[in-house]
Image (cartoon, rainbow, N blue to C red):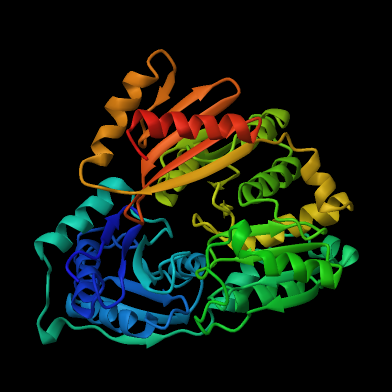
Length: 463
């Protein structure tokens, strides 16, 4: 039991339910965030009133008790709490701003299997605390440095059920609904019995699509492994073919990631989600000199799309908070991560599958041609993703070992090590959310990418 991993990082806390993640752990993390929040300026600029925190969760069976434990921690340090129920991660960010709250928390383990759950913190601006602030929260949690209050300072708890409608309205205000209604594409959506089905259904109904909705109910009983990868979406591809649909979408349990299947039922890869959304936004905005942001593990397709539009790409360490900070700093029109995460600033600074769906449907309708044809015109690369279980000391060896092995090459050490050549790259880093090391390589062909992975594994002495 004590050996079960408890991940603490810029992405929040994740653990194994009933092992490393228990009610006392969840309550302590809620109290640590609430205690930290009390030292920050409030959303309205004041410093004295009790912080207001909005709290949502995905549909996992462990969600109710984790939510109650986190709520107890927040209330115990004098925060006011508004429960949003089962909602998406970007929805919590949206509601934090909508309700003028000082922060938000999401009970989710994103794409991890059902045995995991986690807790993600958001600031009042809807952005996850950046590394230096995340470190402060983690230090409070580890040191049990919590500012509990007496009965006279306890605050109230409320419920708000408007989240899906608020999120959908915000998305609809940023998309040409008439264009999509005119095309009336047939769409298959796999919501994996997660939190994303309700808000997505509202948007898709408003857009007038012909919808086949798979696993829409938020039961938390995932019908297949919840990470939206090729091997997990075979049934979606078949459903697209059977329905003669124009496109298929797959959300992960908290709906911050989106994968796409074309009209032939072919999985085109999570990397294409951000690429397609960026292709459309850069064309729609029509601004030369615009910038987009993505992490170091995201495909070079984005660089090609940006270059063709006269835009630039800002690269960041992996982690939504890092990408969001770069987007704010550089005024990026869109950004995200190659795991199917689209961040569209007019909606929020959190990866949002519902915004991604709307933008890609608008692209499909504006171009009025099959998705496979649009994808076929984007310069293609082969990207391979590998991982190994993290053992003690392994993370510390990455930089010195690869720096020596690839001496003379272009090396970026913002996050692990990324080595770049004109036609390929490889990125090696430890995960923020799982006890693993990730190895990602991209090249013009799969053989070259595979050789890069093998070379890195050899240099690090991995089997």
